[in-house]
Amino acid sequence: MQPKDEHDLITLKNFISENDLNLARLDKKVVKVSQFLDIMEDQCYPYDTKNLESFWFLKMMPNDIKMEVIEGQKIASLYDTKFREALKNE
Image 1 (cartoon, helix red, strand yellow):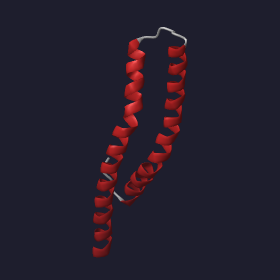
Image 2 (cartoon, rainbow, N blue to C red):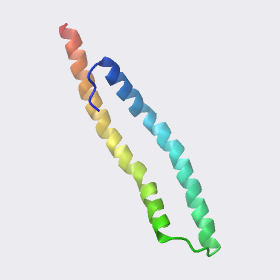
Image 3 (tube, rainbow, N blue to C red):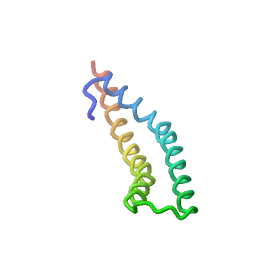
């Protein structure tokens, strides 16, 4: 998403800043799934390996998202600088 005006830039910055909170909430859910899988394993309950594979993708996804957020913050900062320069020139 490339901001086209100041409102878009503010919306983008707010979305990025809320990301850590949203990831923390989702991480709690992933921990619960992990605990559930541990219980299933302790009870020798058979489960599909595709589910376990999906869980590990879910577990690793926040790290990928954090890397993308850092990149997004850099881009938002560049656009912020451009908007500030444009406002100074007006």
